[in-house]
Image (cartoon, rainbow, N blue to C red):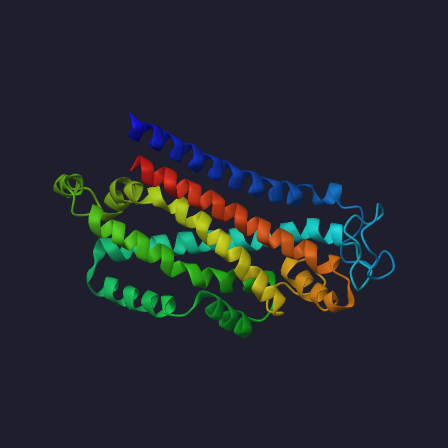
Length: 278
């Protein structure tokens, strides 16, 4: 009985973490979707004197170029969500597909793909993203590619390991005996058993991708100016911190941390729930 009570309390905590993370992500998503309605000014145009403190006219103040920080934060949510969700989705599709093929067919294909993915995985994620972004140059598409490359090996290794375990089970052998094609076996029998853990890994990768995208923009390798971007605005704002102008850097940094925290909480809670059910 006591064990059941502990399990129930733990599940309530896991559910609370998941819901808290989901609430934060939905808040940022609402900001992004509602930016054209909620933003009082054009985010790329100077609308007032530079470095004005927060006021009713400018709730988050203005930056060094006289642009409204509140408007840039709202539109910046669009950019960061677009980049991180697109890049992690590309990583998921590419890595999972290659892992499925590698694990199922094995042989020379498996060895070649494993060597390539292990080589990519050996690099620290941020360093690899910086290197790719430096070669490709700034831009939304190039930033997506730079971040995508970092997470492809994660999905490859995870899916390949699951496929190696699943393909030796009796129901797969039975499907082969009945004459099912490799494509049918992979998509109908193997893949559904692999997909269970992907949402957890995806949410954790998105949390990491938020920080990676912000770092690239901070270094000038992400979305080019004057596009509203939290990492880029954080870089511009930190130059004025020593002069006492804290608001241009505070708000972009706060929302970068908040969004990464939201995805992390959601991923951790989901991981505990899935693990508990398993």
